[in-house]
Length: 421
Ligand code: GLC
Ligand code: MG
Image (cartoon, rainbow, N blue to C red):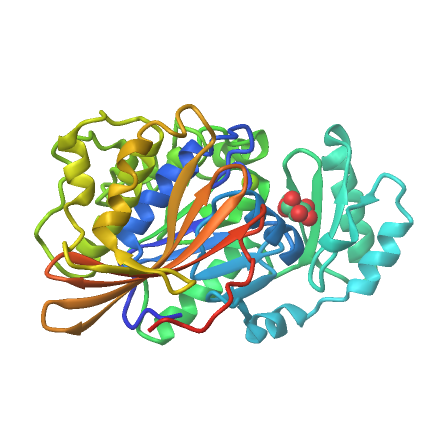
């Protein structure tokens, strides 16, 4: 992790039906959240994804949806914790989970129960055995399985999620236990987050909401099993908010409910006024300006802003008149001219599935009034276009260098060439 001090905010969010709305091909709520996080929180806060998915299915989701890169990824219902962009596993947590766990007993007992159907091989993990069950029979099957495992001397955690999924985990495992482990680790390092908010929609998220001291936003589309858990265990807990908005919009609503600022997504801003670059400097202001600038490019190309000189001037404003754009293939042109090329393209992607999002913004102060900003820019037209951008920001003027790579539905496509800076 590259945070040198306590994160201002840590968001721990589930993915399917929380961060990701599988019913929205436009990914509206996810893109709203991404813009908010990149602009206002990425410089001093920590994003954690906590999913039931295995590494294989997690990577699949990242190829399909415009997800940000989290600081920490918790996979397989809290049984695998990984750090940073390169997802380095926490072996200490694996050793914790080994205590009292015997996977072979679970396999033996389960194979004698025809009501349990094993999920795919990718979802069977060292500390997780997963099945599909009939929704109506789930409580009874869980009881029988638990009794039989106990009779064999094994205490496990059984988690019923999404109606049909049943996970068998070590007794000390769950998304909530993984979070408690992380919080303890942060505390030992003197880097406890100032605030933590957890977000989820289904049964495997329940224990996240039970972690002491955290805020929680249960998204508006929360499933029956989570709502039941809430009614039985957490009705009086003022720190848990039941959002009315769904998926990632429910996360933003949670921030608003708990007064965690800034909580207005740049995607919700009105064009006039709000989009005009501020004259502050520093990491947050630069991140914000990068996000607003890319968003305005998107809105221009989609014809969602007025086609006027006034708007176009706002688009050009942050670019230094004498700055150069260096592409991957060595082409060297005036950045201002490159932006000028967008002028006749107003509305080119009108009503199309086109969007731009920014990930992994890293801003470093390299001198008086000078910053180096690096970020990944993604454009989606049905396929992804990836840019790795380095900007020199001097008194709020952008000088740009970038590398680009076309990728067909794959955000991991390797970018050739050596690093620019
Ligand atoms: C994800 C996992 C699955 C698990 C479910 C509920 O869908 O892929 O294995 O059972 O989450 O935790
Ligand atoms: Mg979910």
